[in-house]
Image (cartoon, rainbow, N blue to C red; front, side, top):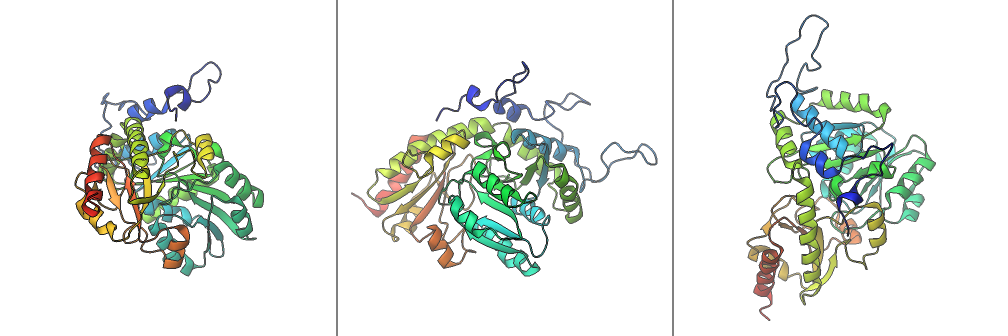
Length: 402
């Protein structure tokens, strides 16, 4: 898919060309630190800040509430997502937990049934006991969403592409559906898999975007972070108060690491996608592989939708092997590709969702979504694509010498 600069840029407005995502990622919100001219945002490793006088503030008082390094990161991620406000949290789950606190006991939320198991655990094991209710729906099917709407439905939460089955939900249609149902209801989109480089849900009608910044935004498997991005003035003060009161704010050093990672977001995302397209095509030709899930294939059920609402297909692949007994052999035999649970880093990782990322989801729901004992998930990194294929081929041969 064409993802050159002209494709990524918004149309010129008033004679002023909008800056490309490549430049925003590389340079950040402020370009440099204005007090000293430092090109790299300093790590403001301070818990407190001096007040000039009584009732006066520099804008920074206590780092749990606001910190200069974190503020630069929040502004940068908001710019990348074309949002007005950004909030950085210690983890993606911390961001999601803060977001759900905008709602109240008795509220109903529709959620993608095919999603990260930790999200399911958070909603069912914790928020259900406080009186929240959730419906788990195939959100790639707008008719199914419509059937699940209730009088007290206050939000629709989607992952697109979904984790791990790579289903694509129509963001514009979902936004229209939930907004028509209730003007106060909101569409929340987890944009972790594609990152703001390939997809901007706010521009398609979403109210809130969330990220596990640990993944593609940071990009180096060396820090944890989470984000909420939005443009709604009515949400900003409540979210800031939750962030400050709960103390789940991102630390200055982790904020700096994430800022450093974002500088290469454009380069990494393009390379990951290039590699993923190559590897997904190779997997399809392997006798051991039954089916490959990747939205970049023209025969993917939502291929046209993916092209319409995104600028790329990302670096995530899932696939079924034909024999469950091959799974442990593959996981033990890969050497360049690492058997680990995360995704989105420069290193390629292979995951077994059934026993890792999706263990919190009940078996009946896992199987309905397609997460069975033959499913493997690949997070494709930036290594040479031929080396990655050679590593997979050697692992496959350990099972089937051919």
